[in-house]
Length: 215
Ligand code: ADP
Ligand code: ADP
Ligand code: ZN
Image (tube, rainbow, N blue to C red; front, side, top):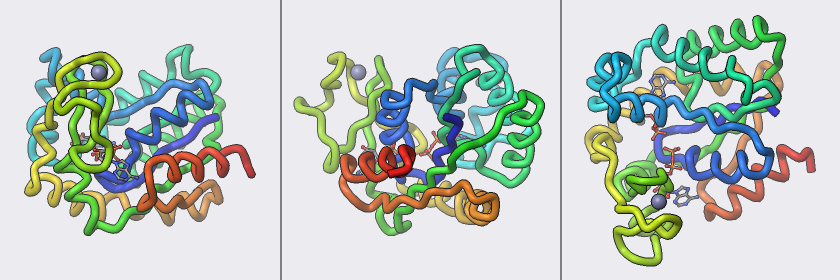
């Protein structure tokens, strides 16, 4: 299965990605995670993209398309992958179409997680992530058993630098201007699945999985 997770910042893409990739045994390809890893490791790419992530602006399309192209050309993506946070512009969507056609592959689904912007700031500002394994929590909606500690690995939880109210508001704006047009683009291609993301994490997962299974 080749699928895309689409949705505004804080909609639950990363949270749902975990369930989907376990269910369908495909790699999780998150551009945000790849950029953060490069920033942490202070690579050439990391140095180029840091200021964009800090502001909540989009990284230029050329850089973004290139890392995705490299990633989905690897052998473990041959039989499928889940893209999370890519594409985010029409240019990226067109570039993805070209890469897939070069690879002789076809996109199966675009899972569009719908959440009203009123809820997004609280979701993103309350987000906490494990420093060691990357597991995502929420201060109110998805608490770890012990405050500040990862249930899975005991690692310390931290807050993303771009999860402040101001930066999230900017990211929501960027989403509305640059990414929302993709909903129409993929609706016209007939591969979109719209999911109500304002339900519990488990209910959203069940809705996504049953849709992907064609139930
Ligand atoms: P969220 O899911 O909360 O919106 P992400 O982890 O997907 O956050 O993205 C974090 C940041 O990484 C974005 O604000 C942007 O700077 C950069 N980024 C991620 N994916 C893309 C993309 N497809 N195009 C451009 N920039 C991106
Ligand atoms: P995205 O990758 O789209 O930016 P995340 O999956 O990181 O979003 O979720 C953002 C925050 O909201 C996290 O703290 C997560 O635990 C929480 N969250 C995710 N889905 C839900 C939901 N259905 N209801 C309440 N909180 C949620
Ligand atoms: Zn952990």
